[in-house]
Length: 145
Picture 1 (tube, rainbow, N blue to C red):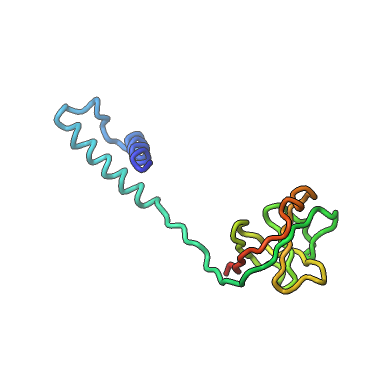
Picture 2: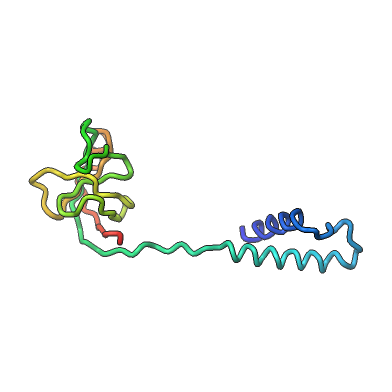
């Protein structure tokens, strides 16, 4: 993959600069020009590479997780729930971003039933069939800082 990127950047540099294309160069100059072009492209690719850092997280513990469906009502924060985004939790502040192993990143936007313990979360799945399929699971939860 890296070699392809280098060749693409080299071609872009060739087009965007005043370098004489290899087919117009003397035969002995072609290798040097291509090597210089590839070296320049390699530097450009290295400059563009970025390191993606994982967010800092704090382990909260094992939570029991159920799922809930569309009720037609907004969440406790006033927004409507979104599949792949919303969880309900009584023990965390609204707006808290959490990472749930096996699920991914979610945001606490809603509150659960009054009887839910402090280590309980509801995952918004949107439809009854998905909720039954989910059931009740124990999951590891982290707060994303």
